[in-house]
Amino acid sequence: MATDYDAPRKHAEDDEKPEALPELKAQRSTNTNASNLIDEDEAALADSYELPGADLSGEELAVMVMPAQADEFTCASCFLVRHRSQIALQKDGLLYCTDCEG
Image (tube, rainbow, N blue to C red; front, top):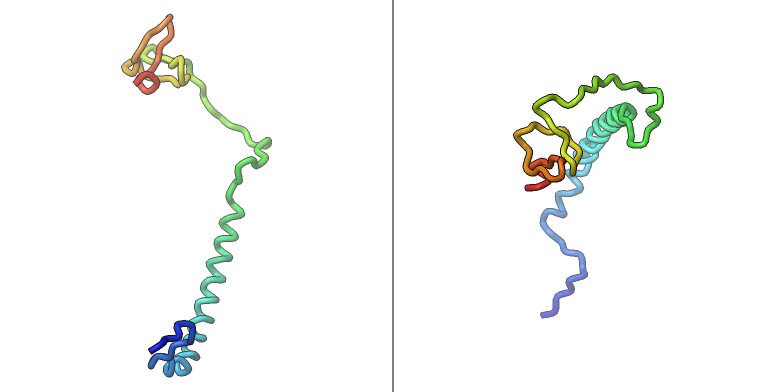
């Protein structure tokens, strides 16, 4: 027996769909109102974000810059200030950290 797989199939559940349609429409309208509220909140939240490349010329930073302490060194490879316990190599008077040499 040949079967036409492209033909629409009929199920016992298909007969129940017209009865459930008004209930689904009521749920959909309730969910639409809730999703609109969420979208509005997201839109308001998105306005408060600063995007990369934004004009920050009016902003002023207050950062206290301290010189390297006695127990610190600057790595000659990554240029980060590290604690002396992280010295891995001293070459030509330059200090290298364990991350760069490890």
